Image 1 (cartoon, rainbow, N blue to C red):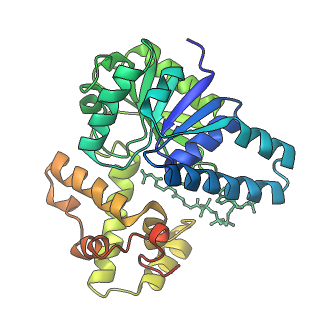
Image 2: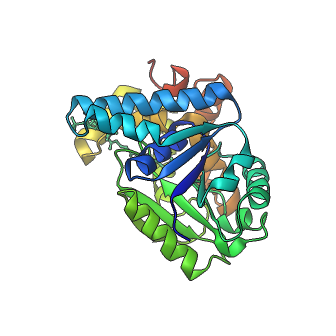
Length: 282
Ligand code: CAA
């Protein structure tokens, strides 16, 4: 099936970014979230990102209008009946994702590939909530989606070769570089990134350094574009905690134990950039 219309579930920072790059590549996009205001926030994130690109003369004002014009907002999952492929980018919560996939399986046309942008949850388990496990796959984009080249492509136990190839082709069309990873907790990117972020939080917790100094040391000493605590604030501390819980539970090793300070920040609602406060104040 030729993919002309892509459904995106979730209009948060990842969902809106995925909608933006899909539309930029010429696809029609249905960007869905549970409430109108979430969809509107998604559109305003996309506008800000495109505005930046217009100012830098990477795209023209007309191109920006065309990109926005190809994205349709939606608050009903039944709209996905018109999608030729779907990428789910809802909150990192297993029960929620299983429910979304169960519903998508009911609404989407037969043969439609259902992919998840999950950062750590088992694709095999998500696929198990549908009657089409051979058509379920992981498409893990990185934040900020318009800037980051990688898409980790994760096959579940039953994912077919056709689904894998079509997904790779879709990622390439969206201007990304697909790289395969196997279905284990956290796949590759977060299996390695999250223990580093967690260790940075422990270093802060134990007073090894201030947030600023920990970040500066990692930036200047290891040539990272951002320090780990700044990056955690960008990703969202709730998302970091959720991924660490999946690693801890799924791999059963104490080395993935989330730092108590991370848990405390999340309890306080200090979720990073999106809530205005995390390790830094925005
Ligand atoms: N939309 C459009 N343009 C953007 C943008 C956005 N959302 N964000 C940044 N840019 C552009 C800027 O306009 C700027 O353009 P020019 O080069 O033309 O000037 C360029 O990107 C660089 O931006 P800045 O100068 O503001 O800042 P920077 O040099 O630090 O780059 C960054 C920003 C690309 C985000 C860089 O800091 C970076 O690569 N950080 C690390 C990001 C990272 O590790 N992401 C992975 C997170 S983990 C994940 O996503 C997986 C998961 O499951 C949790």
